[in-house]
Image 1 (cartoon, rainbow, N blue to C red):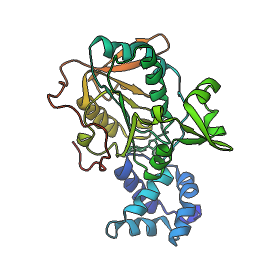
Image 2: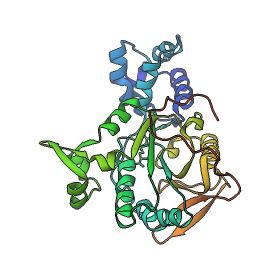
Image 3: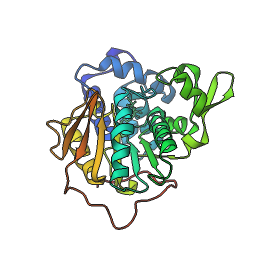
Image 4: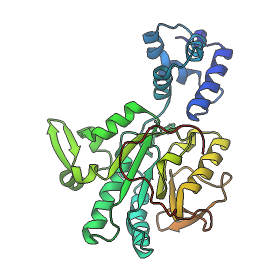
Length: 300
Ligand SMILES: C[S@@+](CC[C@H](N)C(=O)[O-])C[C@H]1O[C@@H](n2cnc3c(N)ncnc32)[C@H](O)[C@@H]1O
């Protein structure tokens, strides 16, 4: 597909489709991005213009095609212990706070987990914390979600090449928490993998099947969304957080303008948001425990 094959009207129609499908807002002048990311997919589908592709989407339910387009248009960049400070805050402030408040079996949500580096980094921190305070929290469950089934499959496999492992993982942690499965491939050990559950979830849709959480990591994804989607997602995240629950955003993301339901907790090298008290109450029934979950449906 060339720039010429992408008419202004097709581009506009595609922009609307993409935002409705996954929240990503394409700027006015991102034609090159669409052209470069969808060229191969369109060749595979045998369509010449973006308008034709959108027409294909409109004809009945074509879920695999929708998923492929969303996967082609999303950015999956991630690495181990990204930005460092959220993991320090988790270890030094949040896990001790949960122990202090006698929270049992806390749940942590990695809400756009990409290939798994974020939830497994969280799991390593939990492992290290519990090694020095065994039994202090009960079972910690990490629930990791992403919109992309392909990415989720990679995340579940928990197996990475040396290049991916070199991005943020210390040699000590690599030796301790990974086992070599092939020449250039290492897999996270069961004690790190087993506390992480994965399911597909679109942040634009309902969170009601996910249960409630004590900590949410929602990092480096809202940056692509409109102000309305950010406000809506933050409001619904506030509702699934237990009282005193925490929310991490990416280091270039902020809550100001979008939500007044959180207060900022400043820490030596970064900050985290805490849901204001009175917004949510711990439910009398426990949240869902491990097990495969269906994809989420309408809003809630
Ligand atoms: C840049 S990665 C961030 C990964 C990780 N949170 C980090 O900070 O390293 C963004 C992820 O968001 C996912 N994503 C994009 N739109 C989404 C949506 N509407 N719902 C859920 N996940 C989405 C993408 O598939 C991608 O894996």
